[in-house]
Length: 353
DNA sequence: CATACGTGGAT
DNA sequence: TATCCAAGTAT
Image (cartoon, rainbow, N blue to C red; front, side, top):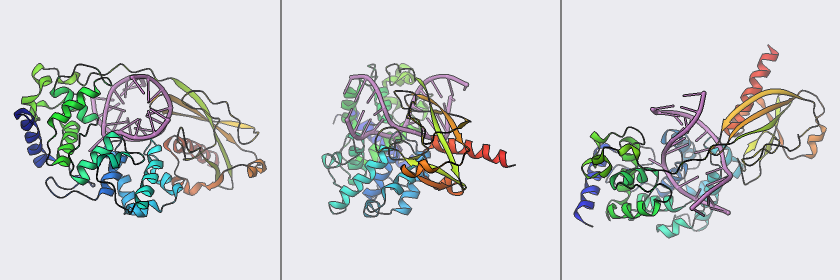
């Protein structure tokens, strides 16, 4: 390592010793690594998800399933329901698959980066992060924070995603061989609190004297990114069928949008197409309002169709369940359908008043 | 390499 | 209000 790389990692670790965020899945700077189970769980939850959103879910999961063996023994539906609202539901399916793989191998996570990378739901980032944070191994940990910090430090003008390889080389060059976990978390804390996407606080940055973008006065324009595509507008229908203060819910297919989650029946809308599928009953259907919901790659207007009849016999041949309205909050509905349920119940409240 | 995959908070 | 963005992964 050359002198300037040492300057960067040393200055960053000194800053981290004084300013590390106190987070439930962390150990104090310089102290022994935390339980790999908790590191892994937090890292999966934090994929594309904010610290604020993760905190309550992390508490819920570790309280309910304190060890990887406990999670491995859990019912899949209960894990999916516990994940409801956090998004990117493939993570929950992979989480359980990973827990079971680890439990089947004696209950210990692999400590090597390649061993971790082979587990379900662990990609390049998460494998490196767990290796560094839970096992103290030197690993090049590159997430969106690191991309931003490094692209500024080294004035990387090539746009993402093409710049990934160059950014990785730079990150490798400044990664120290000791305090691997602290270094990785320090880079992420710096990116989250100082080297922010907009209005970076360069005056408070421990790396400002080494930062090429800071010297140029244009830190804010990094990382350069390729232009995004417009999000298409889609529409679909969801069906509200009520009987004896219960609503008819289904389980979505294991893959695809909201895969594996409990849901209202719908007409098959997806990222590719508006809905065209059949209703669970012949109707008649009343208009129950519209839920607007933004996904990563499209915007959806979900039209709620409400059945007020009493011919439910055709449902007996279908997969699904009557869920009591008074415990609808425990059904584990993803946010889109939780919004739809809220809409239906609000309208119902008005009717009965 | 591009696309599918959620959600809520900040600006 | 609209857009951006967050500790990415799988295909």
